[in-house]
Length: 51
Image (cartoon, rainbow, N blue to C red; front, side):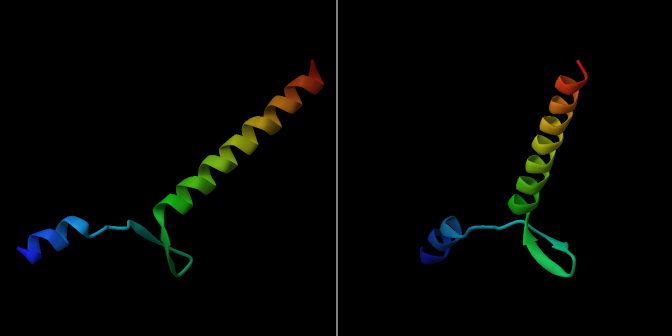
């Protein structure tokens, strides 16, 4: 009984090998999303300045 219960509580953390370190996937995903938002903001400001 204890074995099946402990498996339900186990949490699997997805990691990737990034620059020789194991990094949580959500950290990489957050950085990519932040970079994309910054890029969109930069392009938007550029378009506003041009027009």
